[in-house]
Amino acid sequence: MLWLLRWFLRGIALLDLAAFTLVMLLLSRLPHTLLASFYPKLFHAWCRCFVRALGVQLRLHQHHQAPLPKHFILIANHPSALEDVGIPSLFTVRSLAKIEVKDWFLVGKIASAAGTLFVQRESKSSRQTAQAELISAVNSGDNIALYPEGGCKGRRIADRFLFGAFAVSIATNTPIVPVFLHHEAQEIFEWTNQENLLQKLWTILTSPNAVVHYHVFDPFYPTDFADKESYSSTVHRQYLTWQSRFLD
Image 1 (cartoon, rainbow, N blue to C red):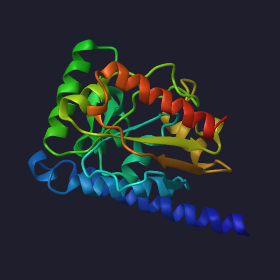
Image 2: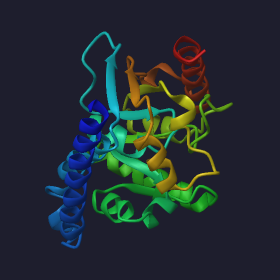
Image 3: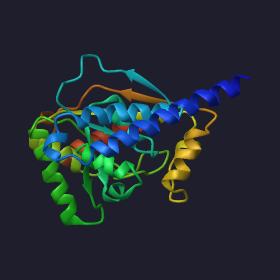
């Protein structure tokens, strides 16, 4: 009977998400100047609803010794599709996403209306444009979220971090808040090229272990580094240390 109750509650959560999504889609048709005043806050609530509907339990671990800065650049490892709603469900940020997200069923239109920034990873000019947009967003007071691995790279940290987040941090003199993600069911949550988005979401929805840990650590400050290369390599080494601590 317990499993029946669990799926009954899950069904209610999915219906809530469907209704919320319909409202978000209707509102997304409003002029952008009007949306900017309220839609991002609704987007963060919609992300929380999405996570809840998937049955995922997000566990926030605050390892930082002092309160986090109010203005920051958030970075995280990116093993799963869940991060696209998991990160903004916990943090008030604008995310940088691959251009393909714009075309995702329903989600793309909502993310665009919420102010998500997009980049075509294979295009140098697109990457340069995205970096300029990120700098502008940070200078205007927004917090942004980036994945320095450059996309979903699997359960283990990629061999290197891209420089984008660190260049933006230096250009705007804004600290980086690092978040290390730890999925207890790593293989289930990992997103590979063998699954499309809907298949991955179904896999997460039916996971026997849907606990995900978000470990937040003390920020890195750009004034402590001579250039983006040393900044990136130092942070990357720290992520390898956390990987050894939480995953190995």
